[in-house]
Image 1 (cartoon, rainbow, N blue to C red):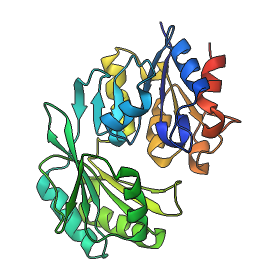
Image 2 (image 1 turned 180 degrees about the vertical axis):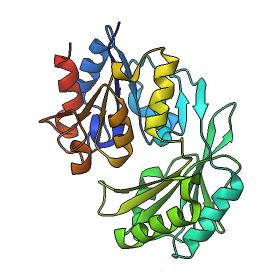
Image 3 (image 1 turned 90 degrees about the vertical axis):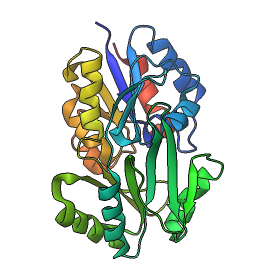
Image 4 (image 1 turned 60 degrees about the vertical axis):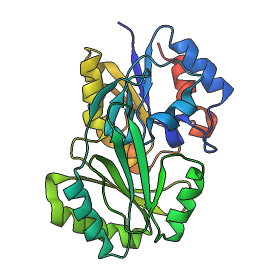
Length: 274
């Protein structure tokens, strides 16, 4: 049977300038001749497709932190959303801490068209993040931001001292209705708090992908660097952290690479994998 490899994108397979090197492209496409390769990312279908248009993918992609699983041909395999009532309740509770989220939602399941809602009231970290989305057609500015009918995730950016107590407040308020991931943002000195459906993470999505491929999770090797990869690491047969991964990710990895994302760590591993 063909080996299976699934990698995170940002800070793992992508370089810090958000590019894929020629070396990584060549190794990936060579490896795809005798292996099954795909991605597990916080990015949307379109953003992932833009990065990966030169790469051959054989398996469904885990997108938006695991809330959506889609084939490279854009066939929806699974989706986990937060309904409007719960989404609005999250926004209202967050407002007590004087912070409002970005809301990434699905407008149409048939076409997988997404909306990226952002508030008019923004902190410095949120302003910085939006610079990367300046020409994104999904963007919708909201004076009074509210959730949509099918919300994939709500994301708060800010200082740790704001988001840590906010995460605890959400956990006390909503409990197991939601999943909460607090992580440092490596492109800046801020932090982000991602709110998801309790089965909308990479771990649950990895299980779905392996069921789709009719393979066991022990058959897959996964690569990552951040908190949202940990659940996936614990399920996979082999977990591989790049050299620049967070310490808590390295602690649960089977392999810690000597090379970072900027040194094509994943591609170097794939080149030598048998």
